[in-house]
Length: 86
Image (cartoon, rainbow, N blue to C red; front, side):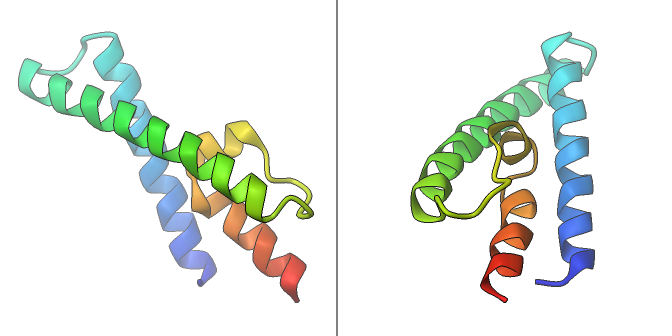
């Protein structure tokens, strides 16, 4: 996967988390607030499960952390795994 895709994914995740934080503070319009809350919870759960599976499969790869994986998902751990495989 190219570095531009990884960067774009990280940027999209930053926007997602910003919207989730704004939704938690109820600073978005009600309809958007509800969507942002549900989507944020969905992404958080998906990334938590992703961390469990990735950590089990690639236990030997150093640097796969919980917080970066929760924030960025595969955009964090995939470059680490690919660098290790080279």
